[in-house]
Amino acid sequence: MSKKIIIAIDGPAASGKSSVAKYLATRLGFTYLDTGAMYRAITYLALKHDVVNDHDAIVKLVKNIDLQLKFENGITHVFLNGEDVTPFIRTPEVNEKVSEVSKIPEVRNELVNIQRRLGDNVNLVAEGRDTTTVVFPNADLKIYLTADLHERANRRFDEYKEKGTRISFDEVKSNLKKRDKIDSQRSVSPLSKAEDAFVLDTTDLTIEEEIQKIIQKVEQIKLNKKIEV
Ligand code: DC
Image 1 (tube, helix red, strand yellow):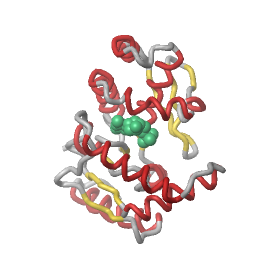
Image 2 (cartoon, helix red, strand yellow; image 1 turned 120 degrees about the vertical axis):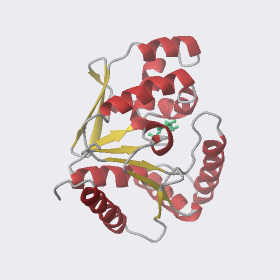
Image 3 (tube, protein in one colour; image 1 turned 180 degrees about the horizontal axis):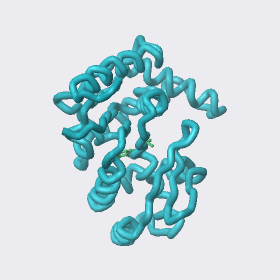
Image 4 (cartoon, protein in one colour; image 1 turned 45 degrees about the vertical axis):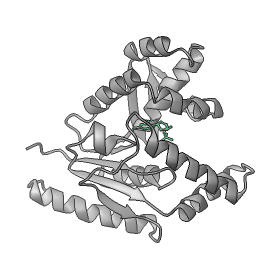
């Protein structure tokens, strides 16, 4: 049995996956794998080459990339063919196109292969839509993070407020409801809970309480695998 630990975190939009995954990886000293950043990087590249609506051209691009991730000071830096593209992957243009690009099966195949390679031989916290079901079905710990719709809408609304984005709470809530539906009904790698996932409902928990619950599970895994605690 491998002595390395893989933790995979999945869950609906605004469930707090990114914050928990980053914080957990930092606390445990594990590598953090932000799979969404990879789909964003490909989308950025497709936009840059002006081929974002051209399926074949995107597939060609993705087969010829050198994609590297570096996690430093709580930020995942994404390097595409040697260039740090981190500042360009969260723009409104990328936000608008990323779900289309991430639907392309060849893109998913390539990225899943890269994600598995990145998970070889390191202690890992992997976060993203299909990490518990498709990328790491044998993960040591699978976490399905969730919170009720109202609470998720509250959290997203606060994020928007902080960024100065003008949007009403009702709009945020109805957008999330729509996104839940699309995410769980899409044909390629839909959002779904792995059967053996630990479901963590974060509605009434602080991030510290969430981390403590997960760390308890990790300590148990270390004991079972006979890894020095
Ligand atoms: O988590 P995020 O918002 O950075 O993800 C960006 C997009 O990529 C989002 O539309 C879902 C998609 N994605 C995916 O299809 N599979 C993953 N493993 C991660 C993200």
